[in-house]
Amino acid sequence: MVVVYDGVDALDVAGPVEVLAVASRLLGRPAYSLTVAAARRGRVETFSGLPLEADADLRSVGHRFDTLLVPGGADAGADGLVEPVVPADVVEAVRLLAPRARRVASVCTGAHILAAAGLLDGRRATTHWATASQLQSEHPRVRVDAEPIFVRDGHVWTSAGLSSGVDLALALVADDHGDDVARAVARWLVVYLRRPGGQSQYSVALAREATRPGPVREVQHWLADNLAEDLSVPALARRASMSVRHFSRLFAQETGSTPAEYVAMSRLEAARRLLERDDLTMEAVARTCGYGSVDALQRAFRAGGTTPSRHRAQFRSAVRPEPAQVRGA
Image (cartoon, rainbow, N blue to C red):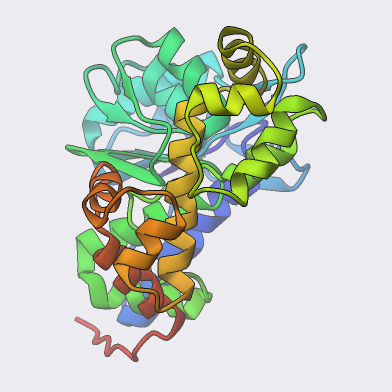
């Protein structure tokens, strides 16, 4: 069952639904039966203006079902920041429906609806990186992790922004029908075979361009081309011609992360790119990206739930996937 409401993001709905529909087609049987439910049956306006049609009323659903999927919706708040759409009637309906589902999942800011319904208390969860801090501050009992593409904690799944709903749905298919089916669906949709949940949703390059012109952005641009240099906070502050205290405060204010966190993310993102695109040795990747050793490189990847070798195998194979056989059952 897919929950929709005015302001829901069309991609949050369509991406997972297409994955499940293709899985049914490739399996040769209706592996997934779709119900689109809203507070009231009928037309729903998405964020983009594309209309959807709800064929069920959330309040009238009395039967048990397999999966409750809650897509996200967001708008620009008064301060220009992203504001999740969290309708009170949808929150209450989700709270009542969740016990009837085998599993519950959200896409993007749909995690805010799950949290408001009390379904994420005590659980690890993710959401769109732009609203992760808000989710944590409003729901302190949730262990928010803004880094992964998706997170599974027991029977509750949450995913990051927008297109990561496809990754989540592929993971659901793999959980239901095996990796071969998920790989076949991914090839059909011409997407990555399946990004692992631990892959970062955060793009350092996008964050760099979002910073206003000034000394912080200049440091960010220099840093991107000099990852093997001394990138300690004092060294970066000297480059910006600021005191360490003032630089650290300004950097956090403009980027939303500390200088040390930003350096770590920059090095890790660069290492991922090299592993995906080049045949460099692990020693060369570690040296180029400013890690002191291969051990340090491995520790950085293990913190995200993978290893450099596993990441290379996953994404190099995703470029040239082997055919998979899918049989109906």
